Length: 467
Image (tube, rainbow, N blue to C red; front, top):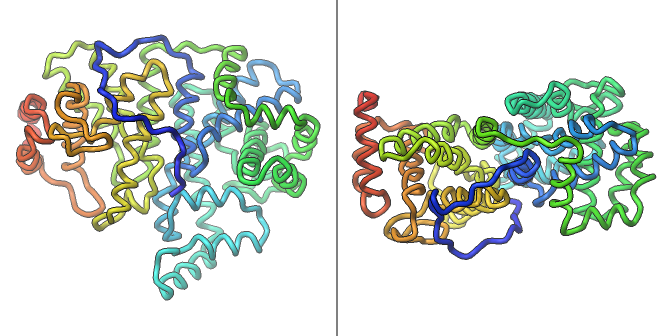
């Protein structure tokens, strides 16, 4: 997998709801932080969407776009990868490969036959035996064109759909849908050409490529790539604008340590959006969907864990405001899984020790992403601890019962219950009575007794014991 160099903190003592700070949230802060999750699932270094967004705004400003158009462009680029998790499992299935490395390296490939063939040979069936790998490569060579179109269509349509759920306009949604179309009509998935491609899509694509090549090989490599793809991938006017604005100060700003804060602060000048509780809930639910679509075995998992968490909180006497806050943490508890390859998430057999260590990183990634949002800092501690155990044998920090809050214990109970009663790569769904029996064996060591009793009460109240 592509490693994520985000700083890993030492083991925290989880904040409770009463201790966690509550601050108003702005759209740019929340989306900017969650964009790091999208970087992960595209195998990109942290801050890719942020950097691409800054590049795009410079291009849009040079084009003379008004503030409202710049605001739409801002979120088109920040959310350009909203649908990226939806084709991860299919990539692993078709190419027998690590989806994160596949996606990272694919962004460095142009449309030339030599580069495409080399990419296929380097990224297909890499962990398979020689005969199986040969079979995989031949399948890709026969069907690669149709598979590529399918994968791009899945990604673009899903991204456009989620953007609408997030209350963005059709213009933003269409900008996301058209991200992979090329100026000469040879892009995916619909083969749109020239000005039939939305302007925001054209700017997002060129901004993405500039960042990818700058990070991998430096500014000169970015400019070389733009010249090579001018009139093919890219609108010639946009290429010329980049050459006009890409002076030394441009590249210095792009590499600045303050760029993320600068980009977040840029949005209010374009159009400030204060988030009310309903909107925050919708954004948390939408990103929960982004996580769940990464694997066919986790479809609906975040939403169900959110629902069970809310019901458990009610059963345990938490007030409505507390439950609403905690449900957001439940919806986002697995957002760090976007940084784990589907070759591990969907593996039908037991994980190796190394694979399990990689899997465990998802909890840390969740904490790192949510901690970027001031108003979510308490939720970051709670959500990243959902695999901790009362006996200290959990991960990622090995916390013990004295350091694990009731909030975390509730999410842990909901998560385990849903995981046992849902289909998994290595087994079918387990009926509720059997699931409760399995869970009962870990009460006091892994599970909180009070939370388990509340779960049993819920299954009886809603007649779930027949399932």
